[in-house]
Image 1 (cartoon, chains in turn purple, blue):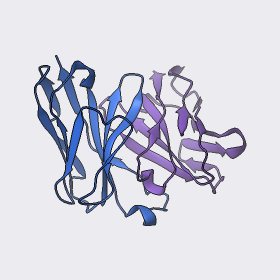
Image 2: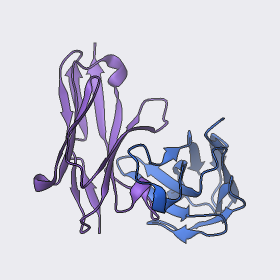
Image 3: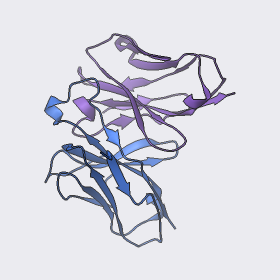
Image 4: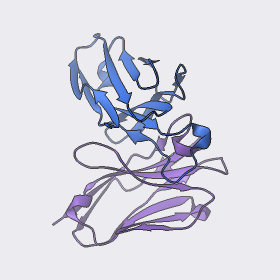
Length: 117
Length: 119
């Protein structure tokens, strides 16, 4: 069975601080796929990144970066120089099939990130 | 190109009433999904349709039925609504056939959600 744990229920930081959102996963498969989604206050789900288990390179996109470590089953997300617009709930998700799989994504419970001005 | 659309956006039902949530995508996607989101629970899969004409149960299918009417549309029906079905419902779709979905942007794309309250 798959499981995704986001231990941080809520994080509050002051604007311009760096913040890291933790994600730990469990799966029996040797090939799997990890995702991050953002849910702003408006409620829609915005895809941020997908990472395949066989690709352990870290990813950087502007102020966002992701650290994938198979040894610790973690896929952490860091926002550098946070901005108020980054305030949202962030979900980590896992699938054993590409693209979210035949049986869907397994989501963590989300981390509510609050960026204070 | 509207992406994934859902109707209605909001709905209030009384216990025992029935209703159908509609989902449509205009991106020629093959696979479609229904999730529910409850406070502090993340999203959980209700049903999915890997291709037109097929549907399968997800993690929490009880109390729901689905219909994959055609490639564009995937509806979710509550036959007899219960307060436990109060939730936000999301529809999603994936661009390519699953066996080809290996690219970095191959993921599920979500609709805006339907907020359902059952009294």
